[in-house]
Image (cartoon, rainbow, N blue to C red; front, side, top):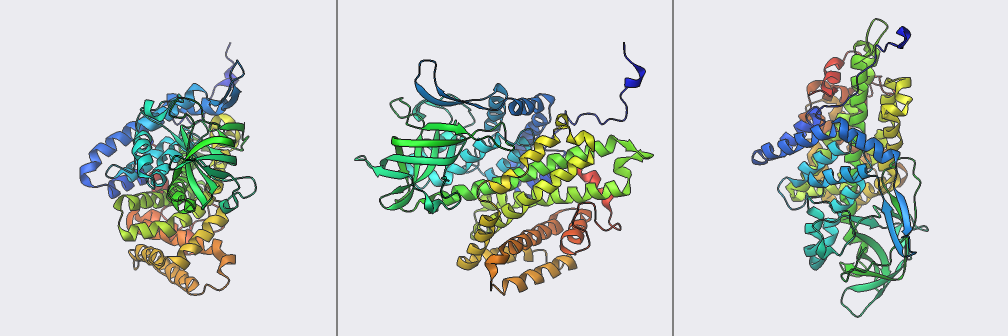
Length: 545
């Protein structure tokens, strides 16, 4: 018997069955803006298909299941043989297979590849962020592999493949492969120069045996890993395959999987190399940091994109809820105070998306100016956007009230995930110091940055004042390390403001400049000036279509 008191009313329907790509106007506009016309139809078709799949009930369920049943470590088989394998729920493999098939590891060798791939990454990780780690590592490994052309000839086509093969086999027998990374160690963390893992050269050219450990090894189920170790000539990059050419397993002992705050569906491990671990040198001895920096820069951009994806999904859920939920005589989205909160969140989300996509486009253009821009803008963006993710997701959760605090809403999973990208690939201080390093050693980087923001000068007086204030701060570098975070924040905000003034609707750019550059807002979300046209901003952020 159904009790009359149990009739369900005034609840928002689930946000499923929609196109995650098309309904994200800021993202769709960025793709159209940055891709050449001859690539646009094909790219939009692929991204719409991925968007519809990501927004489907089935794929959302895969994300939930992959988190509900996290990976398990199997060190031995039933007979006692060491196997060091990670078991995942079938939903994890389905998500990863769909991402690989969508070309999310294929950016470096096709026209417009970075913009297309960045947009797809931003879409796909909204269903589940954890599987973005192996996708990101595999994509980012390519610049490092190219330091050793013979290795790149074997591994780059496998990394760019649209075939996902989960079984561990020699590279020659696979149609596609995933790559992971192991840089940090217990004693050093981000200070990889303190690494103690040693590499002993063998008679064969470029072959070494490794002894040591890695405190964080990303995507430990991958086919190969880029690691740093101390060779006779200094810190060097190496490729460590899981399976050797003769079909035997390489010595790659997974000691344990990390029990993490979020990112539960993804495995992160501690691994040991026992002195018989075979590795192939990548690049010159003693040039390990230079070799891996291309990989690190690419994964840092993925941190920006991953945070933008989390923010977008959180804001979409908040706006969706408020568009259906009624209280105090009307829809929440129509209440002036709630509208202010939603608009403020939407502006932050759009700023992150526009910045991330501009940096992806810089990779595609490959001009000297754009490559110089990446060297200073990537760490600044990584610093700021990833730090904004936590408060955005937390405020979006609050928009759902008690419903948002319940696991079934999906917001708690987003909240647990939200700090990750700020920690991954160098936490805030590392990013701020890298901005300083670019300022001190690469004049072309600052010049490229100033040219980029200069494209918007004269369009908004608040932006112009912010640019002048930044120039004043850059002119005085005394004691700059202690204020490196302040400088990185300002550089990111000015760049976001310049991009929004150029490309976003006037209502979005106006709200950003008022709240982030004009000082006309409080510290919390929902404190934008009441005179702004916030209804347009909120409606733009709705996930429809």
